Amino acid sequence: MKKIFSFLFLLFYLTNSFSQDSINIGSKHHIFSKTLNEEREFWIYLPPDYNNKKFAPAKYPVVYLLDAENNFHSFTGIQQSLAKGPYAVIPQMIVVGITNTNRTRDLTPTEGNRQAFFDKDKKFFQQSCGNKNFISFLETELHPYIDSHYRTSGYNILNGHSFGGLTAVNILLHHTKLFNAYTIIDPSLWWDNEIMIKKTDSIFNKKDFENRSIYVAMANKISIPQDTTTDMARGIRKFEKLLTSKDPKNLRWAFKYYENEDHGTIPIPAEYDGLRFIFKEHLVQVKEAVQNPALVEQQFAKLSKQTGFTFFPTESYLDWMGNFCLEKKQTDAALAFFMMTKKYYPNSSNVYLSLGKAYENKGEKSQARLSYEKAIQFSPNNIEAKRLLEVK
Image (cartoon, rainbow, N blue to C red):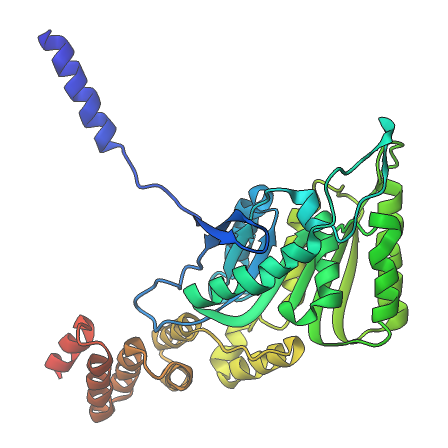
């Protein structure tokens, strides 16, 4: 018995010694939809800086991700990787992953009349035509909920694949302002005898899309008799042709055919490319910016013009650039970055702490003292600012 007790004690000790904290990429939430008359689940990913107490609270763009149960994990990983560090090619963003209850119902705009290949007396899709209610749920319930519970900037992206891509086209045409950008991946534009293509043909002639951006991705199709692959390819190509021939007003778009991807594998590369396209002007060349800090604001002015939405460099990015310049003994450049940070984030304690260090490196002791005092004013618990002030 004593040996058994000793073994169990050792096992308990080793288990606790090697235990580690879990890694979480998001959280699950629920909202009851009056429009859909059911409870809906959605998943939230918050970017690394969102809860970083070092920086002042900032607002973030939001990506609404359809079919979250299939792609939340991969999409958040792509987004985090692309938004990481001083060479970020996209901004940090909140991701709202929307899971399905009745996918065909929610993501199709009209009744499905296609006959089932296994029984000519039955319809292939038993429940459909709920897209109007689902879009209303997004517009009047989920979107306001997200904006009221999280720090959102007002720039919103919709990511949809297959039926989700069909929904994205429907929203683009009829609820254009709901999203600023759309990633439309292998959309099911064959639906109901290409009903959405017909609507596109009419609407592209007369609608002002007000600086919306869309990225359309098409997978390689293999003809299989009992499915929709041939119709699907035809519908997507017709949509591409309309984009080219109609040249919709103030609609920025790109189309890519993925020869080496099929309908199931295309989401990951298309999501990566889509984000890169939407934020094409986001990347600032670090080495050039160190020599000329004004390039940062110039680049973000290009991004803002391209997207039709005002974007600013983040506090974490400017702080990194300023401290990098301090390490390289380029104090004037560091001061320029910290002053830029102060311009956009005037209530940040960290801004004044960094400014104080830069002034101190420059030999301007009085300015350094004033900056440290300002840092403490905005954050009485700024221990480092207090220490540096006492040293002075």
